Image (tube, rainbow, N blue to C red; front, side, top):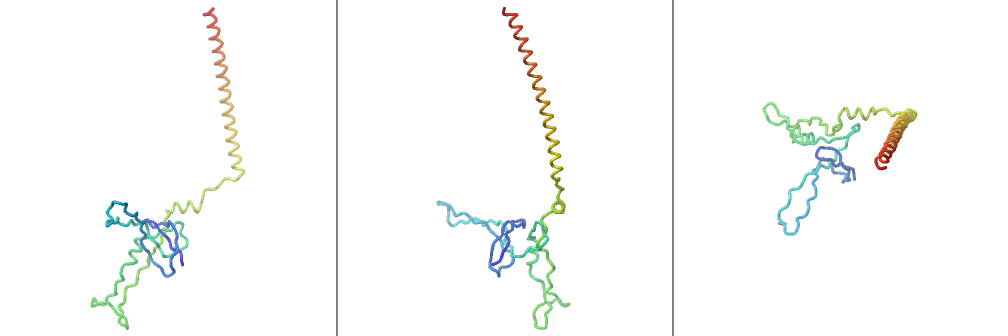
Length: 178
């Protein structure tokens, strides 16, 4: 048994599964269709829905987010073309077998991240040291305490203002009701 990769329609790896050792290549992966409900015509089958591919081709090392190039795979699987002699007929070897043009090298796995994303992974922003973090938090706490003191003083002043207003209303009430 060997591991093969399940990729989505964009070629990105979604899962891993095990298959027989002699399996190789790329195979379509379809979503299971629901059984028709009672009363529906049983002879009509919904079209299968392609949801990805099973890829039994190893991923080369060094890729951050491997992406399988499905168009490159299709190009790679085109039938080989025979080499043609000057008379336009296919060339043959000593055994009489047709000589085919060699396949061009195809890169089936590509990098799925942008250069900027790779750069961000390679050079993450520097994390502050514990001392720097403590200094930052201490400064924030001091600002909060100052703000809290200001709010408290404003609230005290407002309460005194309300108390004076209450006293003056009480005096006026006494004047008019006595």
